Length: 100
Image 1 (cartoon, rainbow, N blue to C red):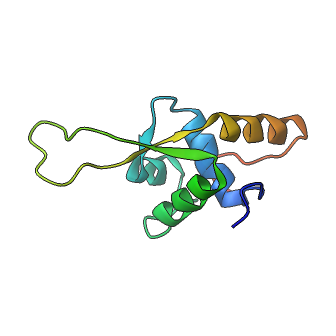
Image 2: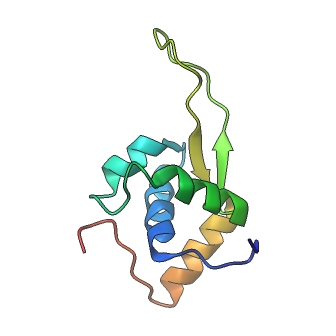
């Protein structure tokens, strides 16, 4: 996949959510914040594509106290992702998180 490929509308929704969470977000937080625009079964596929394109990075996290499972990755918008969001807004693209 080309690193200069423009994000899809659903990827833009994910990026918009991450734009509002500068400290990062878990995949299921993105699903919850998307108002059903992003599904549980596709969130990690979308995040993987965005990471390949250079718009999102995976943050290493420590397990929370009392959590016995493996570390959960958090995702954060990169500087390149922020530039894409700014450019999209400048040309009037709409990719709100509200219901379509």
